[in-house]
Image: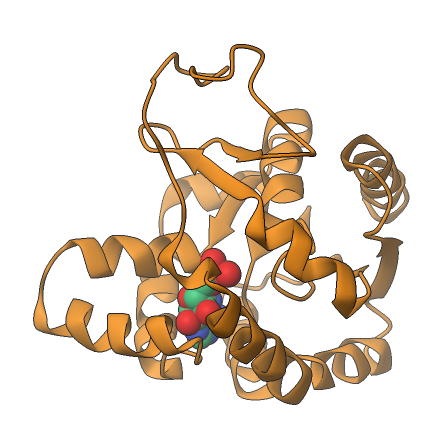
Length: 217
Ligand code: AMP
C-alpha cells in the first residue's frame, strides 16, 4: 500500500502517519522530519534549509527530492509507505510520478485531511513531542499518561517546533493554500483522491483511514 496524506499544517498528518505505520506496517516518510535532520547536521545545506523553514516557506524542490529519492531506494520501502508532507506542490507530484514509474510502482490513494483554518492555530499552539523518540503530544488532545514522561520511551525531555510560532504558522497556511491545494485537483483527475474529516478526534480519523486502507488495498 502506498499512500499520501495531504492537509494543512496541524491537520494531524504526522499523528496519523505514525498510526498507519504502527497499525498497518506502512513506512512513515515525513519530509519535514528529514529536513529537520538536515538542519541538525549543521552543514551549509542545513543552514539553507533552516532559512526556508523558519520563514514557513517551502524548501527548494531539488533539496527535498534529493533527500527523498535516496530514501526510496532503500529496501524497506518495499513494504509500502505513507508520505507525510510530500508532495507539497504540483512540480513535486510530477517528480513523484516519475520516481515511482521508474520503479514500476503506483500510488494507491491520496488522502486529503480536511480541517477548517480557524481550528488549526489552536491545534498547532498546543503540540509538542518527545525529544528522544519524536512521539507527538498535545496540551489538550493527547497528553502523556504521566505528564512528565513519554509514554513510548520513558524520556522526560520534550520539545516544541520553532516553526509552530503564530506568525510562521500563518505563513505556512498561506503556502498550503497557494501551493499545495492544487494537488487536490491533480489527484482527483487521476482518481486517487479520498478525503477524511480531519476535525474528528484522533481515533475517529484513524478509523476513517482504516476503511480507506482496507478498500484501496
Ligand atoms: P512539516 O513538518 O511537514 O510541517 O514541514 C515543516 C517545514 O519543512 C515546512 O514548513 C517546509 O519549510 C519544509 N518542508 C516539509 N516538507 C516539504 C516539502 N515536501 N517541500 C518543501 N518544503 C518542505
